[in-house]
Length: 301
Ligand SMILES: [Cu+2]
Figure (spheres, rainbow, N blue to C red):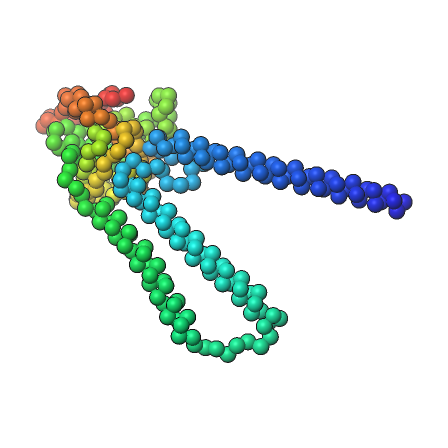
C-alpha cells in the first residue's frame, strides 16, 4: 500500500515537473513571439504614418521635431526607471535591515547634513538635466521657421477644410465611409481629399475653428494644435519622407469628433507642383457659392 502511494506520488511529481517544463517552454515561446511581433510591427509601421496593432511606443517620426520628441520621451523613461529602481532598492534595504526583528534598538539620529545636502542637490541636478532638453524642444516646436508653403486647416463639425492661400484654393476633406474604403485605405483614417505637401519643405499650418474648438494633430509629425473659432493658431512641420501620414481631431468637438480624420500626403516637389496645377482648377475659390458637396475624390492616388 505504502509503496503504491509513493509510486503515485512520484508519478505525480514527475508529471508536475513535466507540466512545469511544458508551461515554461510555452512561456518562452510566447515571449519570443511577442518580441518578434513587436519588432516586426515596429519595422512594418516605420513607413505607415498610422497606428498599428500591438504598437506600444510612439508612431515613428517623419519630422525632426518628432524625432526629438521620441528622443526626449526615451530619455525621460531612463531617468524615471532609474529613480523608481533606486527608491525600490532603498525600500528593500529598510524592510530587510531595519525591521523590528533585525534591528530591535533603533538609532535616534534625526539630522545628517551630508545626506540632506545630497537629497537636495541631486534632484535639482536631475531637474536641470530634464529642463534643458525640454525647453530646447519646446522652442524648436514653437519657433516657426521661414515657411515654404502655408496651409490653413479649418476644423468644422465634422470635417476639415484646407486652404492654400498662396495658390487661392480650398477644399473639404471628409472621412471615407466604411462601405467606400478602397484596398489599403485605413478604416476611420482615410479621407476623400487629402492635404498634399512637398517633402523636405517647411509647411506652416494655420488652424482655426468654424464652429467649436477642434484640434489638428498628426502624431508622426509631432504636431497637435487647437483650432479655435475666432483666432488663428500656428504650427509647422517638415516631413522628411514621402508617404501618407494620418491624424485625428484631438479636441472633443461633438457627435462625430471621432470621424474627422486628417491625412497629409507628402509627395515629391514635382508631384506637388502637378497637384497644385490640378487643384487650382478643381478647387478654385471664387466668389460664387461653393457647392457644399465635396468635390469628387481625386488628386494623387
Ligand atoms: Cu473636431
